[in-house]
Amino acid sequence: MTTLGVTAAIGAPLTIYLWRIRRRNHEVGRGLAALAAMRWREFSGFVVEALHAQGFEADRLDSSPQSGQAADLKLTRNGESWLLSCKQGLNYRIDSTQIASLADAVRFAGASGGIVATLGSIQKEARTNNRGMELMDGPAVWELVEPLLPASLRDDLAEHAKRRSIGETLLAWVIALLTGGVVAFAISNGGGDTAAVPATDASTRAAQDASAPAVPTPAPPRDAATATPSDATTAAEPAQPASPAEAPALDETQQRREVVERVRQLPGVKRVAWSTRSTLLIDMDGSVADGPAFTRPICTVLEKYEALRASRLQLQPPEGSDARVRFMQCRTY
Image (cartoon, rainbow, N blue to C red):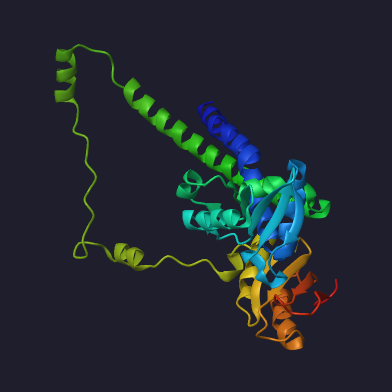
């Protein structure tokens, strides 16, 4: 009963945490990665569209399309101008200097206010000294644009988060069960020792202690001079490593992560991410021209994973290039 009680006491709250909080964190993290893999104009378009619910309308793009994340979008609300700054990278850290720069741009443009939307994070001092700017970072931006994303992408994100939560829940219950067993074992051993000592007064107990045989102490470890040949042989034998055949196979999530890491190291690849379960999005940096020389190493990586080798490749040309996005498959099922 002790084992079951401890197991339930640990496993139940962990399960609630994993499914109510951790699962959502998995979904948000994966969603932010999908937004980071988009082109900047596509990402900023989602932000502007989401701001429509707050009364904002897009006015015009003050800078050229090639300006990318350095561009400020001009919005209007109730006849007043606002500036929107979209920072797409997951590693962006918005500090007070960047907030001051946007505030200067707002004053220069005669706007009523400014908005910063980043997939990264906003530092504490920037939030404290926000100069009247509205600030939104990763999770807040995801909550804003999530309803506008394709249903297929949202379903993929939810399925991914569900699979991860199932695996983590199983592990949590295994840990809870082991902990319950250890606690029950410790209690049973401690209780047995206590029950073996009868309740006596001080003099009787002293007499019992005097007449009780001495408890033998464990023998100290023998050194090399006194160890028997069998002892030396046992100590000298190294632990046998597990054979390669016993190594656990990677699950699909680990395989996808491994594919991303390997493809990212190939020449000509700027950024790579799974935009959907069946599509690998690859941003080209322009150092290698699109063609067999660029795609063959990618296909070689995918060929090693039976469940992923038929995935579709979305080849995104470098920023500023006139080339079109190209889709291909290394092989079919």
